[in-house]
Every structure is written in C-alpha cells, then in structure tokens.
Amino acid sequence: MRLIIFGPPGAGKGTLSSRLGSRLEVAHIATGDLIREEIRRNTELGKTIASYANKGELVPDEIVTEALKKRLSHHDCSKGFILDGYPRTLGQAKSLERITKIDAIVRIGISESMLVERLANRVICRKCGAVYNLKYLAPRKAGLCDVCGGELYQREDDKSDVIRERMRVYEMDTRPIMEYYKGKIPFLDIRFRSHTTTPEMMIERIMEKLRKSGATN
Ligand code: AMP
Image 1 (spheres, rainbow, N blue to C red):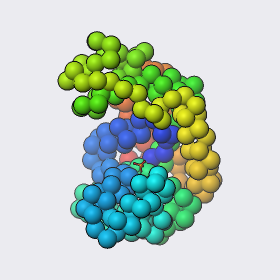
Image 2: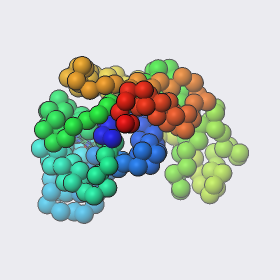
Image 3: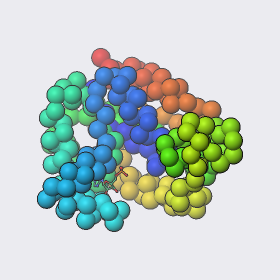
C-alpha cells in the first residue's frame, strides 16, 4: 500500500499518518523528519539543507527527492509507505512518478472555523510536550500539565489570524498538485466533522474508504 497524505497544518496529519502506518504495517515517512535528521547529523548536505529549512523555506526539489529516494529503498518500505509532507511542489509530484507508483491519496479536510477553534484553544506543555485543548481537553489545573506539572503555553502560530493565513497558503500550494493528480490516482477524502472526532475514528473511516476503493486488496 503506497499512500500520500495531505491535510492543512494543525489538522493532526502527523498523528493520523503514523497511526495509519502502524495499522497498515507500512512505513510512515515524513520528509520534515528526514530533513531534520540530515541537519542533526551535520553532514555537508545537512548544512546546505539547514540554510533553507532554518529560514522556513522549502529545501530544493532535487535534495529532498534524493533523500526520499534513499529512504524508500529501506527494508521497512517493502510493504509500502505513507508519504507525509511530500510532494510539496509540482516538480516533486513529477519526480515521484518516476520513482514509484502511488495507490491512493488520503486528503484530510477540516473547515477553517473548526481548525481555528481547535488550534486557538490548543496549549502545549513546555516540559513534556503534552497537548491540551482549553475547550475540549482541558488540563485539571489551569496553566499546568496533568502529566508532569510543567507550564502550558500557546504557540505563536496558533493565533487565529496566523491559522487563517496558514490555511490559505496550504490551499494555494496544494491546488496545482491536486489538479495534477486528478483522474490519475484515487482520492480518499476524510473530513473532521466535529471536535469530538478522535484519530481512531478517522483511521476507521480511512480504512473503510481504502477497502471500498479496492486499494487494500
Ligand atoms: P515539516 O515538518 O513538514 O513542516 O517540514 C519542515 C521543513 O522541512 C520545511 O519547512 C521545509 O524546509 C523542509 N521540507 C519538508 N518537506 C519538504 C518538501 N517536500 N520539500 C521541500 N522542503 C521540505
């Protein structure tokens, strides 16, 4: 099973893809992680990559595609993979076509108002990284983490106007890629319908759609 997953920032794409990877017994490959690993190893390539990634810019297509190609040759990809964060440009989509076949595209949808409500109420523990939602999953003691007692804070980019801007950029950036795949690869659209939707419920819906599409055969 070879999948690509798309979803706006903050929709829980990372969590969903890693759980879906375990469920399908395929590798979850986040190109952001590949990039961070290269930077951490501080190789020549890592230094070049850091000069882009540290400014928040995309790493050039050839570099990220080469890193992905290397990753796909690992043994844990023999049964398939879920690509998370790639392709991010039309050039990458075309390169991917030369590297491997893709069975389906999972597309996570969420309304802008729901995303704002989800993220604008999100607080994170400075110490252990546990995530809370002040409306739907509040900590027992205001401002403190239930797990370790650490201080809870709100990310700078979780403010509502920044969230709207990130959603706009996401839609603008992914549109040409979606256009490119239309009619070539089946889309499995999964929407967050309410705040009580859990990742497990989303996974079940994705599995159901995969079965119906015949991609799990
Ligand atoms: P992410 O964790 O997906 O937000 O990625 C972190 C950083 O890695 C991005 O800001 C980019 O600099 C880089 N990156 C990740 N995936 C790609 C990609 N497909 N193409 C170019 N740069 C990428």
